[in-house]
Length: 321
Length: 293
Image (spheres, rainbow over the protein chains, first blue to last red):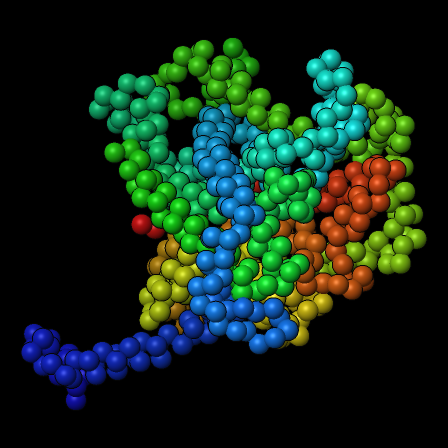
């Protein structure tokens, strides 16, 4: 009855009041039933995705309000983990400082490098272009091979850097690079940058190839005078979707530095010089089994990442304006 | 100038503003310089793998190999062959994880991406939004609850603990969905009019049309799994992976430096070859990788 009323006299819908809600629910149910094949096709992926990504994030948030050590039942302690983390944990402050340093240096640098190299590579002839793409992308897929850098920065004279600097006479004795607080952070940043031309770099190369070439001719007529203006007013706005995507990828990666730090500087590193939020999280989560505390760290990390992403996306909307 | 135009000019469309030669020279110098920074450590690894022991310990260290030898590779087989678990076992474990994880991911992500890309139905946009949001968190955020879920399922110390979560990697679904949106609706409708059901349309029309996207998912997923060390999930020696074996060899000390380099070469060659083969398709997919505003 309700449905007939709706389809025959749509103009009266607004006046009918109650029945509309019911009919919307009925409509929804009809849509769901009609789409059952779609739900079925999505279900394997979605079940795993929810089980191992969405639910863990929610659980992690919940756990951050508990004291939980895997043995006893969790005990609710409210904001205590957070207050301990933010007020009483000096090592966390070091980790936070290092993480922000990484993010502020490697994030923008790798993002700009991804774009700059993609932009330069795009002007090369096809063969050279694919060769250079490989050169820049290879480190990020052979990523676990970053212990090559252990040989480069090895603390004895067999270390590549030591050997080189001693040969040209800059050093007389080998420097123990990875045990010296002064050098740990810069070295991790260099290696992290070496690894960082990944997915977003490819997205930028591809985005540049899809820019409509006729726009450049039109731009030249409209008074664009040099290549830099061309870049700002035509190229960048045309590939805004790829720029957004790249920003998300680079930000997430630059806040999650951990593996490189552990592989190069050890865990924990000398005086926590290479300690990051993620290594702090690993420390409490996998060594000390203070799961609630570790979850609070994870929640703060997630909040930072989300906030930075939103800010960056707002900034990127202004490109080319 | 002919070389210059062969390298750079060939692709540049005719009616473009010129950049001064000096600026071009500077920019491409930059490209070459950083290119060297990127590729030298990899070339060094390749060379190290073929260096005999005496060359590995020359002072000052030499970049290129003089008398290449396969000693390191034969030593690797001997050292690992003598250990409790044969070396081939680590390779087999890694291959199992990598192949099942990659193939399963492509299949599951495609099946989930197709409805999201082509149809509107209750919940579709919110599901996609959650997937996009999840691109923003690093796996470390979920590590602890993941461990709890695994232990509840009894999957600790099984390969399923590595394979199953990797099947629903959110970047894969995202890229696949963006790529599938390019398939013309008319093609799908035509197939439906001809009597194909949803599953046949997916399998016989959509899937063959998104081959470049499969390769992209493969190139993203394969190296990640190929380089996995089992994390905190796998404890049994005979389930451990190649990457884990490598870190053991490296901890074996300086006498095994050559052997370590041999394993490193083994680890990096496979993903790089894969990328060389699939490069153009991967870039084609990335062209559609936009975040919708």
